[in-house]
Length: 402
Ligand SMILES: [Zn+2]
Image (cartoon, rainbow, N blue to C red; front, side, top):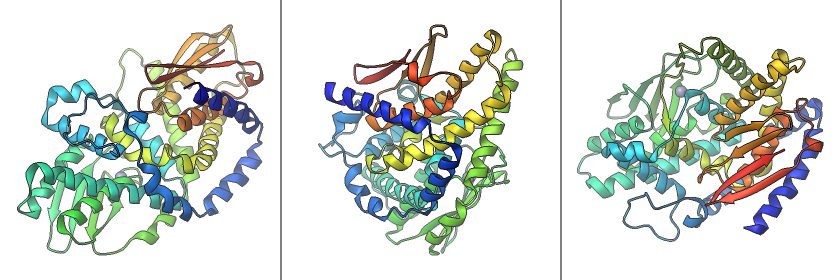
């Protein structure tokens, strides 16, 4: 544990350098990132996904019988979701819930480039196949339609409601109503992969699902069409305008934050759905927590944090005693979107704790969080004068910045 701690602090010093990068350089690195091919990463991806169980996740509340030493994180998360649907008391015991905004930010990160989108789709495909086999182990399907019902049940346990599906001999369509957002981006690439993987495994024939309409792209619902058409080449167009989508997301998120602040008493819930923790991590783990992708993730996290920072700057041009607390509360909320619990112990002298749970207490992610925090708070705190301390308590990390 001591060794790991050292590594993080070392990387923390590196992030100070990243902090000094100008926006022009960020734009440059961003376009480089867009162009970069990740074929090698795709190749190694399967190996890196296999991970020793006790390294990442606490297994004591997972009740699957045949856990081997090479259990995949996806299998654990899928089983948690299946169990949560069948056992309601278990559902409340094991799941934290994520907001629509949290899922959106995660989706923007994992679809940042066309190649990442493709990888994201493949992860969905992989998870969909695992899902089918997990259900088949329980139900031993006699007919394909029985399996399809469980795919819908699973999507419901992931937080989606009122799903409508139609099964034709040559294609399947799945419609999921959702809150309409204007991001100009179809965000549910993982879900498309998941549907494709599940149906492919159940029919024993390769089928491709495509998100034809998306609630984040001016539709009232997301619509997935699964047929034999290969849509692998669509990923480039999907994330062409990612930067504009991120800008739109940040603007509307901060607007909602301020509106909620004003209407604190009436507390409006803007989320259509809430999503269980297992689903959030199932759809993001192989990308955000992949050590081979870590350098790309650093650029993406830097880029998004700078965008947030620029938008915060519009509201907090000068810091006064009066608005300082409000600013740090906004920073707290933004980090909360990434499942980082922030406690503001004191502002003068500065003392803030970033807490990680058992799922995101990973070195790669802590590095990303530091980068994100540094860029987010850039101009508001002087990172040169801050000290960091990292503690590991029962496998969960707490990072204190003071
Ligand atoms: Zn969608």
